[in-house]
Image (tube, rainbow, N blue to C red; front, top):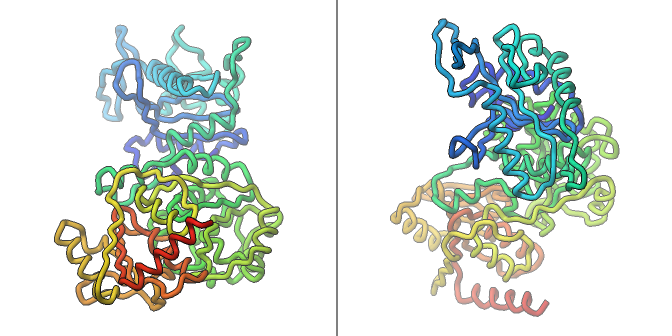
Length: 505
């Protein structure tokens, strides 16, 4: 069964040893193809509290099962429920574990039905892994309170099947929720995307929120063996890739993440730390090891005969029969650093399910509009509405790194952190370096797939041919919060010509 977040995250974040034990069992349970368990689900519209929480929400064969886990002893005395810790100390409970599970069930059912998903069966289960048997009561079915006897893979699998068998059937004439819609909706409500540098107010808050499109891709990735995911810069491809790879590794599969640009090692490394996932730049693949699931980021860089042959060698079952996911940008970033063959891409498209990410979760609305106006590139609808307008810095002199550094110093003076600022020299190709003032000076080749809070673009192309357009596209789509473009009089004329070309198309 898939866990969201994965087991490594649950082990790290939860303080409950009982929840950790249950999570380990859930991961090992071989349930229906749509089975997925969401841990620590926050529920608005709770009947008693402003916001409730379910320890686990499990989708099992189209049935939504709410699970409340209570470690230690549990006892009802004189009409009051108590938990008993390992020291023998008693703690009064506001309600029984079963009542907690049922109230969470009603809250979740209300949330999803309000949103029009249709009728679906819901069940509430209490799990007390440290007691020998559930307390007798008339308020619940014995099959819905699990104790020590169910704390094995076989025992828990059988317990799920019994609960599912006893689930209610739909009333006559109501709209029935489709299992795939429930699955996608649950991913959308509860999938936890990693929070990156969440400290820049409304802009960062919006960027860190998983979009519906990303959630649907995560749901689809777990069901389909081969997928091509298309999305412009800023649509969250790499973030979805990392989450999906962790889910595959959590199911015990051997997993590889590969890409053309070695710079992406620094992006993916912190996101998969502690997981059994190989992270290798494409040039380091030897073909000596095959993987159950292979993830390719910035796949447009490798979309050529040699690249596909190399991938074929590392996918168990080969590209035609194995399990792989390729994430690529249709806006021709490959012209910056890589080789894209449209004929090869057309062949690969015939081998996989295709999906489009159409919501930009990196760039502010102002940045998205500039990219669309000047380049005609599809980077998705702007999901971040806050943020400053793009700052065009027109200069009488040379629009080079020195001019960009002056802007960077102003940003620091206004409170920006030096490490959050990139200077991107569009026409350069050298290794990234630190300027004398300590700012990172880089170029499109080394920033593909990456992002920074504040980006200053300089050294614009002398000619907007295919390569120049691709480099400019990469440069102006790296910014999360503010984008500054340094341009000379000559640059301004070339940009005006570029804009007129787009208007005339």
